[in-house]
Length: 334
Ligand code: FE
Image 1 (tube, rainbow, N blue to C red):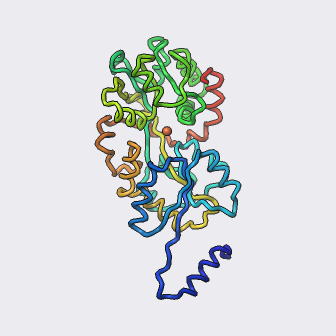
Image 2 (cartoon, protein in one colour):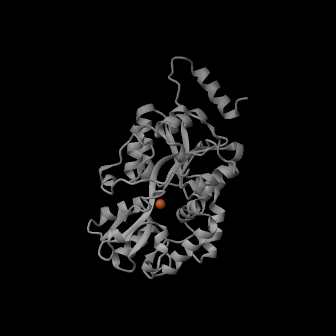
Image 3 (cartoon, rainbow, N blue to C red):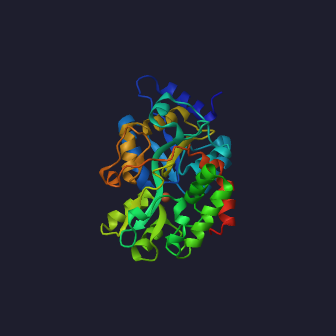
């Protein structure tokens, strides 16, 4: 049965008759990504299709709560957020509606999508090692695990364990090594800290640049942002684990809400967002890697060099999130 609102719309359109062009369905997006990172993509879509897109930005937790609270009276069609850990949370809360699409299947590799089709990745970021070009030779670095070695005592900077990015990285370590070995690694990192954990990745990079520490773990786009502001940054990115499983790659992604009022229009938008046209804009605005492998990264991002990425499905970050949080706590990572 048609929802009352849609029934009225259908009625209104019937009354208007065939001489009027039918208004395109709007799409409403709840986004934890800030306006400047998404508006260019939505503007391009509206220009191309005439479909208006409304979006509300906030932190992911209140947005998810709001979708849950709205229930069948949903206003949001899509939830756009970062990190597979967050998307997996949304999936667990039952606020997403799985759907399959040959377009998305073709454009986005399996490892960057939910196995239940509840969400898909749109852009990728590596969480990798950053090092001081003054005090570290790239040859000194090998793997994430090796940052636990004695060699790095008093030289490592990390962001807080409260951030989902670190929880996701730890979750993939558990998947790879098991909990016991991962706890050893994480304890080694904590023992090697030069100072208290930082609240964000930019602060980690600035601490390396300022000589407070020599190495750290950050998301690539933060490096891109800081490097753009300060081309003389004495910090570079290193791709670890190139001889084994590869670099930890996470994503920003999107899911259709359980009670989306405009599901067909929303699905069409998601499909378009995986195409080369949108992927280019979406990745470039935040110096991310396109999730569609047919699309090359921006010139700036390309200067960081190619790397082998971990092939684990990123939803592992969600599946093992609770376990990772407990392990990080036991290891003393604040
Ligand atoms: Fe971020």
